[in-house]
Image (cartoon, rainbow, N blue to C red; front, side, top):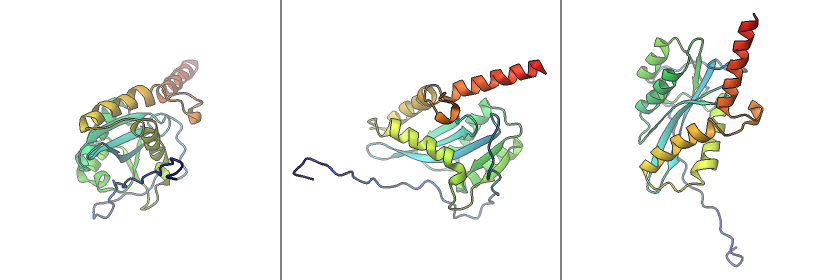
Length: 207
C-alpha cells in the first residue's frame, strides 16, 4: 500500500448518544408495522454527534415519518435532556400535533420527566423502540447517514460555531428543500408536503 501510494481509512472513535440504563419510565412500541398515511401522524426523534477539530457537538432532530422532513432540531455541546426538549419545542411550534405519535429510543433524554410532560400536555402518544432494536427508527438513521455523508464528511468543521452555522443550512436549505428522495417520488420533503396538502385541499372541495 505504501509503495503504491494507497492510504488506509482511519476508523474514528464512535460516540454513543443513547443511554437506556436508567430507572425512568419507558413506553411501549406503538409503530410496529405502522405505515403513516399523512403528515404529522408519526414523528421520529433521535440524537447524533457532529465531530469538529477538537471535540463533538450534538444534534437532536425530529423528522416526519410520512414526508421525511426535519420538523424540529437543536444543537448543543452536551447530551442533556435540554437538547432534546429544545428540538421538541421547535417541532411543536411549527406543526400540528393532533393525533400524533412521537417515536424514539429509550434514552434518558426521551424518558426525562420534563420531555414526557411536554408530550402528554399536547396529547401526543409516546412510543419507544425496544431496547437494542433500532429498526423502527430507521428513517432517522437514514437522515443522519445523509447528513454525515453529504455534509459533515465533505466539510471542514473546525469549531463549534462552524457546526452552528453549517448544520442548519444543510437541514433547511438542502435536505428539506432540495434533496430528492426516491421514496417520495423523487421530490424533496417540502415539495412532497406541499403537493400532499394541495391534493388534500382539492379532495375536501370535491366532497
